[in-house]
Image 1 (cartoon, rainbow, N blue to C red):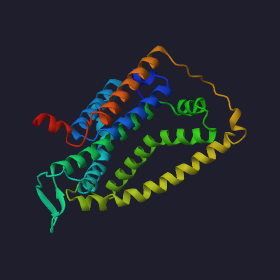
Image 2: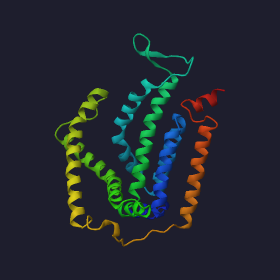
Image 3: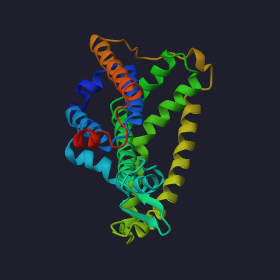
Image 4: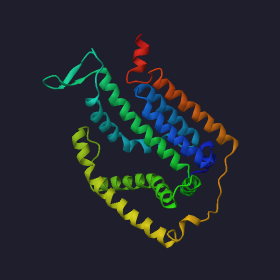
Length: 273
């Protein structure tokens, strides 16, 4: 982690504030179905990445492995969306008027795919600027069982590790002559099968190493009364951020539930009225 990230505003926040931010982002992401609004949220997340100290190259490195999943989320979601009553059908995917392709179904597919990237970006950014020890301490402050807090802390911190390991597997497969650049989506999915198996194997090995490390450090001996070198305290900027997040969440939930905003074609309907 470079010095610019450590000196950023997001890094300096209390870990509890950052966990609240991640929770609010997830709730808002699940509440908004419009792909245009979701794209705006993704742009805001990109701006947050840049202001935190990430370069365009680093953000692209995070995003590139997600492109296949983006395509899969689109393909697997839009055929199951329900078209609006009386909506124009562009064509049918299956003869016999089955699986209609409409503006609503396409928008739904794109919104689901964009939300997936948004969630991964948010989780990756928050975990990258929050040391694992702070995550564990946050869970303990919330009176969570220490076994649960250490498990969740390890899970959060393992996201960037797993991403790097998958990248190493891809590079190793490329050195053996494997190609992942096919334009055919079926061939591209098949090409990633040799990546998935080693990735799962590496995850199992890493899990065993983590278990041995925890045992070696005596975590299982009276975990309820463990002490920590660092204490966490809320600062003024944490209260300001929490008020902002609460206001944003209330506004989105109110507009969604009471005004009916943020449905699949919300922005397009507003622009065409």
